[in-house]
Structures are given as C-alpha cells and as structure tokens.
Length: 350
Image (cartoon, rainbow, N blue to C red; front, side, top):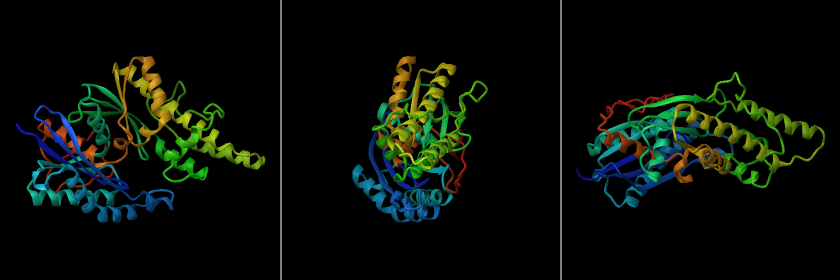
C-alpha cells in the first residue's frame, strides 16, 4: 500500500482552513500544508462573529486558500486520495460553504468524501505533533463555543462526552470579560498577555460548579463573568482605580483552576493516564502551565498541540479524515447535509 494524501476543509466559524496530510501505509501522518484565512478582523468591530459576514468571507477565501495549500504541499489536486470536511457543529451558513466546496472537489476529482465532526478534529490535531493517541485518553476541549471533557476510545471509533458547559464556554467568557475591560476581540490573547503583569490571587473570583453537590465534570463560567463585571462596577462607583492586570490574572486563574481540576479528576476517576488539551483556549499560557503542574503531580501525561494547531484549521480536519481512512471507514454520501448542532459522539456523517 502506498502513501495517501488526505485533504481537509474547515469553515465552521470565522477561519477558512485547508490542510493536507500524508497518510503512510503504517498509519503515520505527515502534515504537508496548513493554510488558513481568517475573517476575525471583520468581526472585531462587532465584538463577536457575525454569521453572514463569516459566510461571505468563506466564499471569498475558499479557492485562494485551497490554491495556497496545494502549492505549499507541492502536489496537484488530482493526487489527493480523499477529502474530509467539517460537517458540524458550527454556524449553518459557514458550514454550508465548506461542505459545498468539498462536494464540488470530490465530484470533480472523483474522490471519496468524509463529512466529519469539528470537535473530534480538534483532538485529532494533537496527533500531527505528538503521534498516535493511546487507546483510552481524556480530552479537555476548550474554545470560544465549547468547553467539554471527552473520553476518547479511538478517534475513528468512539468519543463520549462526560462533561460540558451549562452556560458560557471558557472562550466566550474570555471575550465578554475582554469587552468589559476594553480589550480587543478575541479576548483570549489580550487577557493572557495582560494577566502576566498581574497577580492571579489578588481577587477571589468564584469557581463555578465546584461544590460537593455539583456535577463533577460540567462547567459554568457565566457566574464568573458576572462576578468580574460586578467587581469592576463596585470599584468604579467607589471612584477607585481598576487594576486591570490583577483583574485579568484573577479571572484567568479562576478559569484555569476549574478546567484543570476537573480534567485531572476525570483522568483519575476513569483510570486514564493521558490528558489532551485542545481548542483555541488551549493556547492560553496559564491553562497549559497549570495543567502541566497538576498533571506532573498526578502522574498523568499531558499533550497540548502547538498554538497553530489549537485554533480552527484544515490540518485537524485532514488528520481526522486520515484516521477514518486508515480505519477503513465508509465514505460519506455525496449529498451529506451539514449539522450545526452535531454532537461530538457522531464522529462522521454518512
């Protein structure tokens, strides 16, 4: 059996991504291209992603991004073995652009098509850097729209959600707190940068769902966001100066504390010795740093992809597609539909 080239297309939110992965006969994977066009600057003035703007940006960026990826990989489109595309979850219009493009390429090139889960793709991205996952591991997926704990029993076989956010996702809370502190959108990077100048213990912000009767693996960040707002308002009413760096550091400490504590608990409870942190918030320095400390104390291996692989990209979709191809999964139908609310347990849409 020869090498096979897997093309991945991602368009679930505000990044148009095209990745190309070489799948070896032994199941090894090599990333050949990872091209991304982001429309984040177009959304910044609105303080969040505008679906219609995102869809239009995908339409404009899809073909140029594809051309750059093919050129970077040094291949021709006809050399591709299979095409994987994000079919959900995500914004309906944005997903439709990517799936429509993937269908067109699959039909024109007569190649198998795999409609895959965006969330599973985030976990698959780690294998491009650290190699195959163990048979069982726990993944902490944290992004602008998702905060989940997952039990992974094979990226092409079984993914089970064991915990999720009951309100705001971690990344969403970052964006809202950044807006409160007059920081740029998206809020993760500026808060992380500002927090390095502050004291994470300066303000005792609450840790949601950490009481003895609360769900062991679920998350809640809405109360934390509100607590930050109320604290800032109180300072303003008293005419006090707001220590922005301390607020950012204390908020970030609360988020990282809850995320890592629950992830470590899940690993211990399930008898798993590997934790993968993925998604855009995985690039946060305090989250990865605290996770490293706690994993070392608990004897758990920590895997965090490099920042480029944490955010939305086509490489992660190509990687998930490669896992499905290697496992002999049946291709999706050419008339597959997008599913904006696709659960993470559905790895592929047939």
